[in-house]
Length: 375
Image: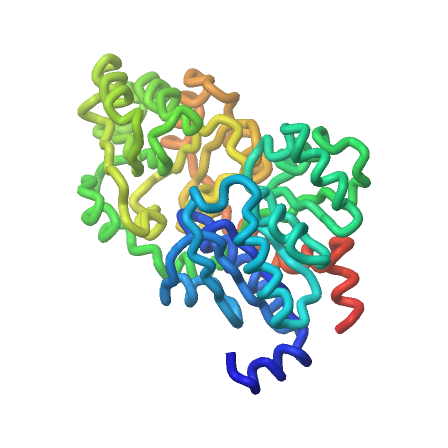
């Protein structure tokens, strides 16, 4: 760091964003929180605990500065003393107003490595089920605020920390840059050509790891049950890979629909091809949120989802949800989708899950509102 940068760091107020890594959806999570401060007096420094330096990640982080600590997952087990020392050094280099930390390990390091107020963002269920984590959070709760990516995640944390005031455990939904996502999405014909899908088929789409949590078995059973009443030549296209691939292919064969189920494998930039689908179905078991639903909405594709976890908060219409594991109800929903005109979800997307909409919610929360008073 140059002398002029050091001088600037002493006069400019900063927000420190601390992320475990940038794999999968977490790079966009960093972007989501960095853009909350766009147009404010605060600059954002994003720090990645794990992962090698990457120019692509720097660009995707939408931050004024990006730092890669370069630890491996093995190195941040246990007490994480090296990470705490590095974090203290970073905190000393800038006038930071607060830290936004994603997931428990960065929250742990941020609280032990600084005296900053910390907003802890949680993306999954069960993070405070352990007694040791409850004790840790309770010890630091005067300068810790917790955010869940859905009301379902928020309520899970509130049940584990019952003595916390409600305003210290709140919801801030995941969101997307709608225009940027739409700009990546290719037209229907080109998307189908890229994925090897017939241009004239009615296609049910699904994206996710082939893992028990995603419950594609229910999806295949529901599709098989609905298939005789779906348009001729209908297909189920599953984008993703995982340990259940062989079992799911065997299930499709057992149900006699293996010719109508396409396993597309891992598709780079998969959200760019969502316009290939006529309907998108998410069968996940207690999805904390369901970012793929937003990406399908951005493509103008009708969505169906399980009536549990965060997905029920994303999909407003009860007629577009079905009970977890209920392949009969899913079949009914698919048949209805194939024979009905659906309204676009773009209005819901812009109103509730766009960068602008969530930014307004963020600045109304207790800890950020105190920052806003300093503008």
